[in-house]
Amino acid sequence: MLSRPTNPLWMLLSSCASLSKVRELENNPYFNAGTGSVLTSNGTVEMEACIMDGNTKNCGAVSGLTTVVIAVSLARLVMEKTPHIYLAFEGAEAFAREQV
Image (cartoon, rainbow, N blue to C red; front, side, top):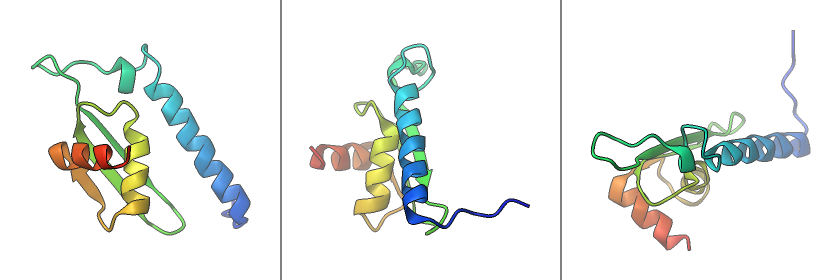
């Protein structure tokens, strides 16, 4: 049976590696996410992302994004900087503008 790693450095590095890989996919024009998103029936892009810390059970999610390219980064900021779990559409976009 596999045991869960408990070394804080390992957990931080694995989290960073996961986010890095998702960001890479969101920046890839050939992948259906971020830059390469398929358009909605209205001809716009709407993106979603969710992230969870398995140790603390903290999570953050965003949806309905039309101007944010790396949605997972905004989901992480929701998790780390707000008391909320989920922000959507104009609320998520307003939060993104506040982070700049």
